[in-house]
Length: 334
Image (cartoon, rainbow, N blue to C red; front, side):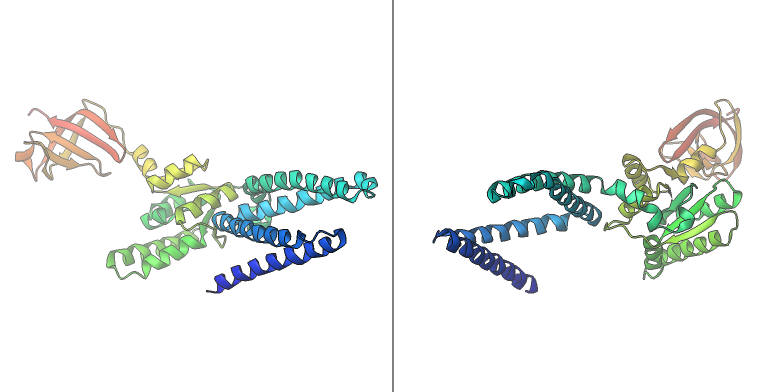
């Protein structure tokens, strides 16, 4: 309802403003119908203003501010360029026509350039927006919710493989608090585990951990994290496959701990002999399933009758999948 009255007030201001301004001009120029034309132009201007309002609401705050800044600078440059044309002041119509021409062109260029270059302007101003200890040339790693809850990041940091500053945005911390306060026991356990992992990382002395208050104007947490990584020129550490893909598409470097874990699994070659315990039967008739110490699934042909026993098997092939590896074997001397 308040918005309705504001719109009505805008229409009234534009209508009366157009009417009285052109009425004054009409009185001096002896044009009686000019005030009605001014009132119509005022209404048209109010409609244009409302349409601009809709577009501003859809545009991210940074781009809006960049566009407004560019527009103001463009109009200032246009006014400065008008000084050589001051000798046209005897012809007021020509003088203002040139001013409108320059203001239109330079204002448009400023608006477009300011909006499109807002991201780069933000990065240049980054040193003034983030803590001073982030303004130096050091590696910056932003942790997402999934990798914090996973917990392996604390062990990796403790080994010294990651050097630099670990950044935990405030919105990630809030999401962990929200999960920890959930009524679902599983979610509550995961959230509290994430908070414990942060505390464990903060106690380690090999690197610095910063809780950053910056909150990009996005609804989605993953989108906020990618935007923040762009601003800080940082690297995201995650376990989320979809976040990994989105970050790479936007030019943000991303480290996936699941990929790291798969890369560190010991190599197994065809013909190699393994000692495994058959845990359960496989999908195909007669197959048995075993697991290596690192969790890699081992499929053993004709091993169903050996469930619960430890046997020696020979590797026949290795299949690499998106989630890990599967080793296919057959019973030695079987």
